[in-house]
Length: 99
Image (cartoon, rainbow, N blue to C red; front, side, top):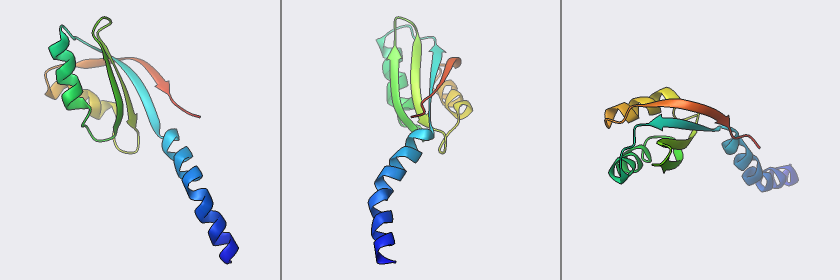
């Protein structure tokens, strides 16, 4: 019994890391980003939304790439967050990050 417990404890980080990545989703959103200030506003606000893991703005293409934990938020909740800061966005593409 003790050996099984030790084995399970040793495998927990590996199992936990795999489970977390499977629940991540990446979306590319179109957002009317007109200047660096617009990008800064998005970065300062959306980055702190529940579940957001990574956020990248591209001023040239007027897109925001957001990676989030699907256990903590949804794309609809994130789109509402964009609306709250005065920068409505829409989904351009969907990518699922799965190992």
